[in-house]
Image (tube, rainbow, N blue to C red; front, side, top):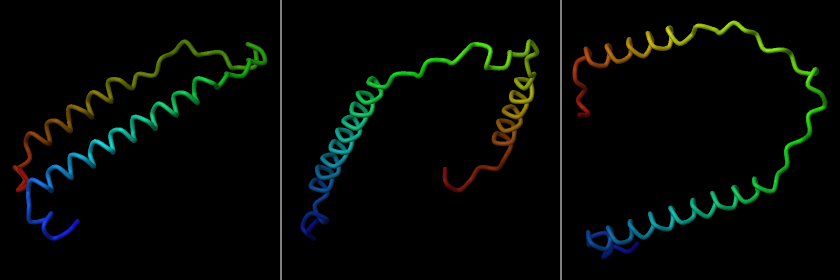
Length: 86
């Protein structure tokens, strides 16, 4: 970038939009390449169903703990003094 481009806000905006568009196009292309490669993969056959341990019927009750932790974070954020960033 030259000094004249830096002093011209319109040129900076256009250049930024151009770079952002190129970035999005590059990420989209990468996604399509990875997806295309993933579609060519084949899962290996399972050796036997008995080689895996049987699932337990008991469910871990962690959802209550997760909800309590989430509620605690929300309450702490709501009750904390406002930061200088906002």
